[in-house]
Amino acid sequence: MVAQLIAETERVGTEAQYAEAKRVLIEALQKLADRSRLLNPNRPPWKPLLDSRRVVRVVLVLETLFPFKFHPDKLVKKGGYNDVEKGADDILRRHKRLASAQNNKGGRK
Image (cartoon, rainbow, N blue to C red; front, side, top):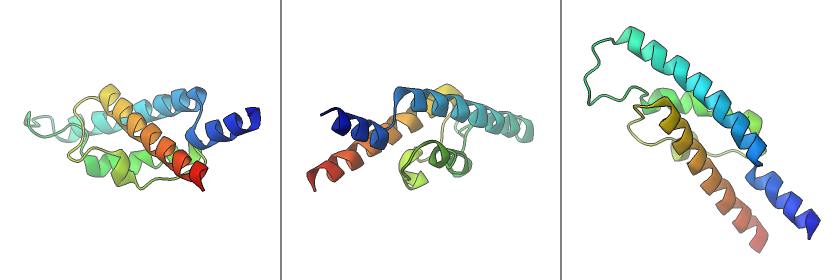
């Protein structure tokens, strides 16, 4: 029972891994937001601060923190984000959901 719980935790990710992932994502997204503000200081309100095409490149960092990979398009909201913290939270929520689904699929075999 303990071995099964440990195996499931490794496949889904621990809270410590997600805390580290959030720290890394916020740092990377903040750099992206700062660059976006610098390059486009008159950004219209309808245009996202963190454009999804650029964010996709940033989420690849998650592959170094977790033992599984997901297509970045499944982790990033289409259109992007206007807030660094909310963007990181959304990406990690999606990642947890996909990891849990993958874990459940693997458990049924």
